[in-house]
Image (cartoon, rainbow, N blue to C red; front, top):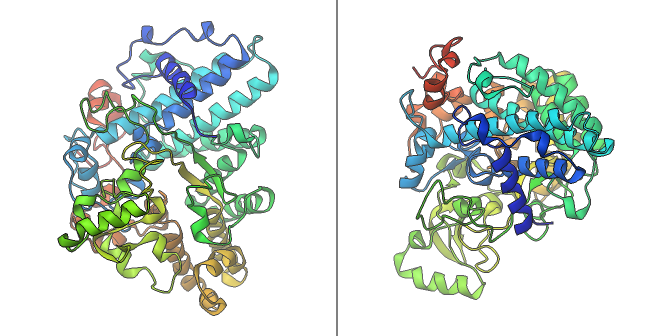
Amino acid sequence: MKTNKLFFCISLIIITCFGCDSFLEEEPRDIIAPENFFSTDADARQAITGLYAIIKNNSIYGQAGLDNWYDNGVDIIEPNRPHPIFEVMGNYTLSEFTADASNQLMSVSDTWQNLYRVILNANVIIDRVSGNGAISEDVQTNVIAEARFMRALAYWHITNLWGDAPFYTENISLNEIRQLGRTDKDVILASVLDDLEFAQNNLQSVYPIEERGRASKWAAAVIEAKIHMKAKNWQAGLDKCLEIINQSPHVILPTYAEVFDPGNEYNAEIIWSLDFAKDITGQFEEAFPGAAFAGNNYWRPSLFNPRIRDEPANAADNQPLRAALKANGQEFNGTGLQIASKDFVNKFPLNDLRRPLNIMESYEGFQLNHTYMPKFMNLNFETSPRFNHGDNRLVFRLADVALMAAECENELNGPGNAYQYIRKIRERAYATIAEAEAIKGLSQAQFRQAIYDERKWELAGECTRRYDLIRWGIYLDVVRNAEFKTYTPNLNIQDHHVLLPIPLNEILLNPNLLESDPTNNGYR
């Protein structure tokens, strides 16, 4: 069920109580005494609601926060133009690979701070709920499992983005946090796997309708499988993928379009999506006072929606296009700042039935200036107005897991038994069985490349691309050889761009962050 205003207000209360605007700058008096808060089951549950509100922040899942690292500046998505607001935030600089140690990138800093906000709050919740006689044992277990999942999620993203990083799992003081140096990422990931195991043993497999949007045990399992695969622990990765495929309630849908149907956002293929609601105000006012979109809710779909003043290619057709949209109850009401890259458009197979959901070059018979990704668009002007969308944010789905299983099987035993895991994905992607089975009979190396491509076409724009390219060891080569229409990341990317720099403001507050690596991931 979609988040309502009361739910969101409760979330803001929790964030105020346990959050921090800066990871290292907050004073201890700014945090309400947790022992005075966790006095009922409802208090503990509301604290978890607060964690969900943080990860739905615009710097993580709410806008283009994680997209800036996982997708933008690679070979699938590019902007249709630089944008002043995004340049202030550092999004464009980040995607262009022009950032250095002196850059104050708002998007990087905000993502760092909010991921550590999740960790800080999760540690407080776990500490104050554990053994709390005022809270029932069942609620204690459920709340701790969800808090440990959120902590694992945050640390997983942190190690992906920055590698070695500050690490703590206790409810320690802010003065102690301010002194932390960087811990080896492998140590952090070992703790993440421990948290994920606890989460899988204690989170629910399925949630009732009114609680959809919460992470199930299967979301935790997906992250575990990805960690094993990045470490090339293929058997553990395959075992976890098969557990999800065989034991979860999730299935591959008959058609690709069904997965992205805004009228069926909790469909059976989706393992986890975050729910958002239209008309929730106040999220962006502090960051962008006076901006046209300040005070409105979820606006990631607006980044993918076309902007009417950019379209169509023939300016004389602008009014006829507007009339066609109006007849459909639609508007080109977005910014078009997330469009399909030239490289992606040129390489996407023309006979692939997924292409129209990933590449839109014309609309209602009008040729467009830019090429959009319609699977993330919502043009309905009544239910999804600009910068005020109620669409879910897709995080994990079963097709991703099936492709992972095929990859693991191929690495372990060759391609002989790997095709079975992606058969349904291939068959819905092509008009004939012969086309779908064209990747049968390949060598192990050829099937490996086929999986690389299949993940690109199937999961485009779903925040998997850079993670995949880095774990495959081909990230730099792919970006350097890609073609772009609007900007030039292929000319600017350097070896150190596999990671982000720790934000300068954090280093100024805590010089210990440079102790183990004075180069700050190569940016100094």
